[in-house]
Image (cartoon, rainbow, N blue to C red):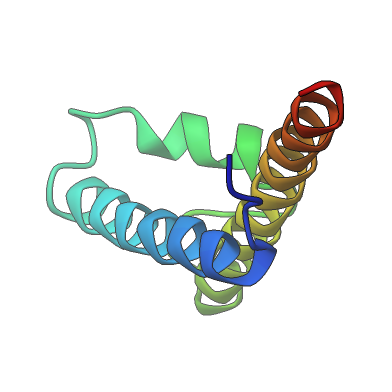
Length: 89
């Protein structure tokens, strides 16, 4: 099996996360009472208040941090398994 590189995986996860964040903010702005984003976003993004310019940028930064953390965990786990299985073979 091939080792997983960190940077491309992190970039992909962050890009998908940012697009999803922007789509959720847009949906929450267009339909404020439908999707429940006003209650959900402050729960997962510390310091977030709805549609404040600082909070909007803070949400983008926090999504990027979460994406890099997810990529770090996934890359470590994948490469750990690859290293263990190639040594055993």
